[in-house]
Length: 101
Picture 1 (cartoon, rainbow, N blue to C red):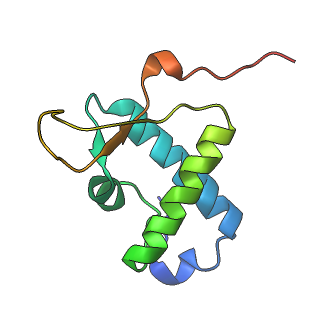
Picture 2 (cartoon, rainbow, N blue to C red):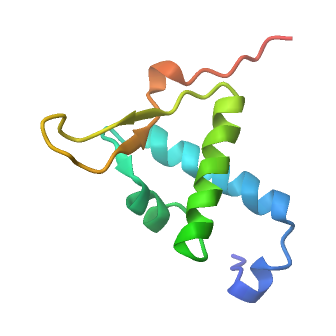
C-alpha cells in the first residue's frame, strides 16, 4: 500500500486533489441520513485544509461545481424549531447522473 505524506501531496496536481475532494464530498453527503454541518464536513472529508477562510472558499466552490454537474445539495437543519447550524446532504433520489448522449 502506498501512503502519501504532506510533502508528497504538494506534488499531486491540484486538479487531482480537487477531483478527489469533490468525490469525497459527494460520497459523504450521499451517505448521511441527516444534514452535515460545515464543521463536520471539514473534519471528516479529506481535502479541506488550511485556514477557516480557505476551507470556506473551497467548500463554496465545491458546492457550485457539484450543482453545475446537476447534483442537488439540500440545505437544512436538524430541528426546524431551533436555530441550529445549517447542514448539507444529497438525497439518493435527487442524485442521478445523465448517462445519455
